[in-house]
Amino acid sequence: MESTLGAGIVIAEALQNQLAWLENVWLWITFLGDPKILFLFYFPAAYYASRRVGIAVLWISLITEWLNLIFKWFLFGDRPFWWVHESGYYSQAPAQVHQFPSSCETGPGSPSGHCMITGAALWPIMTALSSQVATRARSRWVRVMPSLAYCTFLLAVGLSRIFILAHFPHQVLAGLITGAVLGWLMTPRVPMERELSFYGLTALALMLGTSLIYWTLFTLGLDLSWSISLAFKWCERPEWIHVDSRPFASLSRDSGAALGLGIALHSPCYAQVRRAQLGNGQKIACLVLAMGLLGPLDWLGHPPQISLFYIFNFLKYTLWPCLVLALVPWAVHMFSAQEAPPIHSS
Image (cartoon, rainbow, N blue to C red):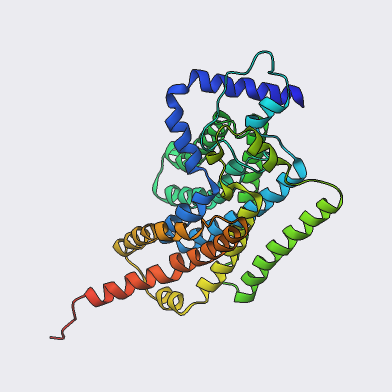
């Protein structure tokens, strides 16, 4: 395994030295591949384009992110930014690599969450676009464009994770394969408008299941905070370590989103908007308004204490589906109805 990890450092070193002029591009790509962006941008954008696809993106994101957390606890994958120091192989001749503000994630490294979660969650978008293109284009090359864009973007995300020393190449490959398989398996099986208890029990199962696994491994003598200690030890700047990269931050996001999805689907606002057909202009207005609400909503999730952060993060991602599915479309629909001129009979 050490030879595999060493080869990964060589690849990261080559990327940083040969493609240093693309540094800002790699940082932007790793931002676009962040699982948080799936919840905060891809989900509302997909939902306002297609209700079914949007719900699929949210559901697959929260389930896949939870699975990624469990996989990382069992696989104990190192991250390059600390392994290059801990291994001792580079004490005499240090590797010519450096960290970035997004390098210092605190969870284990295998498999890559960016690749696995994003790959799975973007699968329904890719298949929906492929279906649309297939009905309108005769050229075979045009028909494969959605699949080609999907693969190209995920490959770029994987390379960006290697570039910033967040993952080794084999962790990226594992994430890409696992994400594509999960996306393929889950897309046809996404629950649509189930009873509220289903979503509440899903949120409860995510929290209880994670707690059971955590305390079982802890009882067996496994220290699941080992990666947090290494991240704090070897990160070049303390301000680069963000609390939302901790494993339980993703759990609070996933369980909150599951509960919020159920509340939104059973809200009176959603029921009213569900019967109305929003036009393209109204959908664009919904997306703009939802993105405008991200600022104050994001502020809600950053209290200084860890325990409060988890609570507020849960509430934040419970509220977000309610805003996207129900409150924002309802507000746009009601405003549009008031602005519409009255119809006079002849």
